[in-house]
Each structure stands twice: as C-alpha cells, then as structure tokens.
Length: 510
Ligand code: SF4
Ligand code: SF4
Image (cartoon, rainbow, N blue to C red):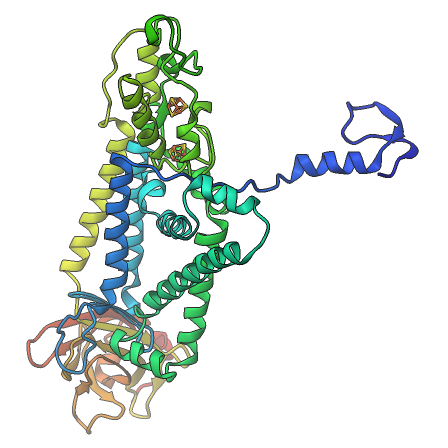
C-alpha cells in the first residue's frame, strides 16, 4: 500500500475538506467501489409452483414456434417460395402465410410493429413487465441456459460449492459440458434464425454440405455467439444494464398496475420462526415472513423482493412460488408475495378493500389505439391493390414544341405487376385532347404493354397535344390523368399529372 503525504482535496471527502495525509490507493479503491460494482455471481435455485409451470409452458410454446415456423410449408403456386414465413431478401419480398409484402408496402410492417408496441404498452399497464418475465427472448434463453447449468453442475448449493473448489478433472468436465451445451443452443438458435431468410430445407442441405452462401455462415456465427454471450454469460446484466425497456416501462404503469409485490403489512416484523410453548409458533406478535430467503435464492436477478419495487426485477414471479411453498410448509396462508397493485396495498393498510381496476383511462387509451391501428391496417389490406403505377413528368425540358405547332410532354411511367402472371395494360389519357400517345419500345400505334410476372416495368411515354388543341389551353399547366387499364379484368390505376405548355403568347402558330 502506498501512503503519501499530500496536501490536496480528497475527492471523496466533504466539500472543502483538505486531507493532509493522503492514501492514494485507498481513495482510488473507494472511487472504484462507487463507480463500478463488481458483478456478484447469481446462483438461482430451482423453483417449483404455478408460475414456474406457466413459464415452462410459455418457454416450450415460444421455442416451438421459433424453431418449427421456418419448416412450415405454404403452397403459393409454381415459381413461388413454399415457405410459410420467409424474408426473401434476394427478391425483396416478405412472405407470411397468405400475406405477401413488397418493399413498396413496408408500411404494413411498420403497422405491425406499432401494433406490437401498443400491445406491449397495454400488457405493461395491466401487469407490469409480463413480457420481460415470461416471453422476452432474453428471459427464455437465460432460463434455458440456467437449466443447462443446473443439469451439468447441480442446483444452487452444488454450483456454489463447485465454484469454490479448486480446478480439477471433475470441475473442468462439468464446466466444459455446460459451455459446450450453451454453444450448441447458440448454434441452433442462430441456425433457426437464418432459416427465416432462405428456403429452410435447401439451406439445411447447403449448411450440412458446406455449400451455403458465406453470409449464412457469418450470420449463423453472429447469432450463435450473441445467444451464448447474452443468454449464457451476461444473463441478468442484459436486463439491468443493456435493455432500455425497464427504464421506459415505468411510464406505462400506475398504482393500479399488477406487480409482483411483497405484502409488508402481513410479512413484517419478519424473523425466524421459533416454536414457543407447546411446540407451536406464536404468530400474534410477528409477521408471516420467517426470513428464510427462499424468495431471494430463486430470483434470477439476485434481488430481494421484500426491499420493494426494483429496476432489476423482471416480474418472473418465481419468488411467489418459492414463498408459497414456504407458507404451505409453515401452515400460513399463501400469497405473502403475490401479484398486487400499489392502490390495493395502500387500501389494505387502511383496512379497506380495493378491487383490481383493469379498465381505467390508461388501459382504455392503449386498447383504443390498438383497435384504431388494427382497423386502419385491415382497411388498408382489404383495399390493397395488385397494380402499382407511378408517373413522373420530365423535368427538363418540361415540353417540346414540334415544327407543326404541336406540344409534346415526356413522362416516365412505372407499372408494378404484383400478380404471379404476366399482364397486359392499356395506357390512355383523360381530361386532355391528346393527339398521340407514344410508348417507347411498344409497336407503332399501340398503347398496350405487357408487364411480366412479379415485375416492375419502367416506360418512356410521350403525350402530344395537337396544334388545334394547343390554342385552347388557357393555362401553361393543364391537369390531366394518365390511366393504366388491365386489359383482362379492366382494373385501372389513375394518376393525375400536368401537361406543360409555353405561355399563350409564346406559342408559335403552325
Ligand atoms: S424479485 Fe421475484 S419477480 Fe422479481 S425477478 Fe426476482 S424472482 Fe422474479
Ligand atoms: S420466501 Fe417468504 S417467508 Fe421466506 S423470506 Fe421470502 S417472503 Fe419471507
């Protein structure tokens, strides 16, 4: 330890206090303690009970959906992918069962994300961090990684003991098997995710034979490593330090939100249960909490719910199971820790009963917004068109005056055929007496074009106003429509644009 005589202000002392004998290392250690808390390893004990069972069920369901979904087939006809859920990056298409979303329709994806966010807001306002506690991928994978650790190294006490033991063949084998299984889970996770981006059976064959595209191996590696590090190594640190949701979700909760809570008014004063006269515990002058810490040792975040609401709490409810187990054993009523609201607890402290309020302005607002966005998306989907037309007027020159006095305007017309068959379209004008429509690349005199299956065709179109019509145009910009009509079913897309002319005085007579 270095001790120096140094007359300067101690950063940890009260403002203005000058330390004469200054222990630099001690001060540095103090600063370290303040700014950086070393991670305490958490050894969650296995919990048993209703919420643990519910978590197993949700884990099995979410993992089954995730792993099985890319293998589900969906017949869309010849020449189209038959994978039910596919993010077809090569063809810029997103297939989701009967839905097919084109890049031009990305607003549907935005709408789905908004719906998901509103659903999360509603769930949070009703029951706090239920998403975090039951369905968040970080929770699901961490739970899985902890189960693996428990399988190879034993439950809490065995794991604590193992970590204290010096390294030897047994410890190395157990740790190695744990990490190898985590890596296997990571690779399966990354593997499952890449199958969403390419035909799953084909990609599986390619991966097995080493012929998959390099990007597939790269992303598989990234996803595998991310799962291993976040789920196996970082665990609760992700929820506490990396994820913004714990900070944001507070804005969606209020005193009527259901939260995993310790019933202080019932549990305190806490203390070990000691049997009195006749071998029975006298509960009359004490609380129900016997300070056994069963709720603490099962907590994956390593916190004590009896200290009140904490940022680290993911609301997994395992402490409810642990405490109920203890209450049953000591013959006290269950639910010393339970889902409860601040309002109900405050009312109970005053001896009043307050019912859970699920319907309140906040939940009504989220439910209303959810219905509104859902309805907008439904209407948009029902009115979805399989023909997209875009018309762009030439900027330079805006018009060309021909030698006979006629005026010609040039346009770029883009026609997107979203059907899985070639289509023929007729291009017409409305609202202007066009003398001639010329489509570059179409046979002379023809106003019809074919757009191939699933294709976007870009056309140069010239519209010419006859000399006798030019004089009738009062303005130098005449609005008119370019109409694209499907020759088979007569479905049409109308795009309003402007026909540009020189000012009346500048028009040259033929
Ligand atoms: S305090 Fe209870 S609900 Fe919160 S994370 Fe720990 S075990 Fe889960
Ligand atoms: S499990 Fe229940 S009784 Fe035991 S310390 Fe926690 S709150 Fe108290």
